[in-house]
Length: 94
Image 1: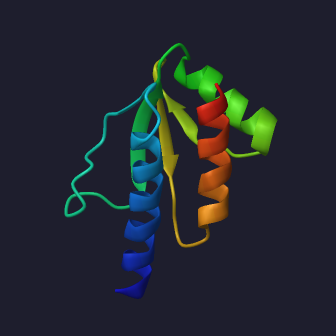
Image 2: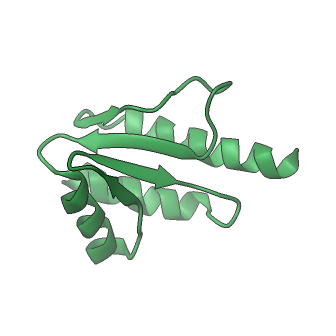
């Protein structure tokens, strides 16, 4: 239960941060009862592969692109809020 709870907490943290960025559209569920650590989203003006490359180049973070438009950001118990904050910082500055 602690393990699942931590993953859900980190996923909620990421989605909350993404919701505050106007150019971001979240495509995966944001219902806390139906989601955990996986969030799929897009950033207006960037393809999924471009966003993946930007996060790697700027912060050495490796969420994966999904198709040509989306990014799949997966958090787990080995992630922390600081890593999510680094990703959100990059996305805010785009």
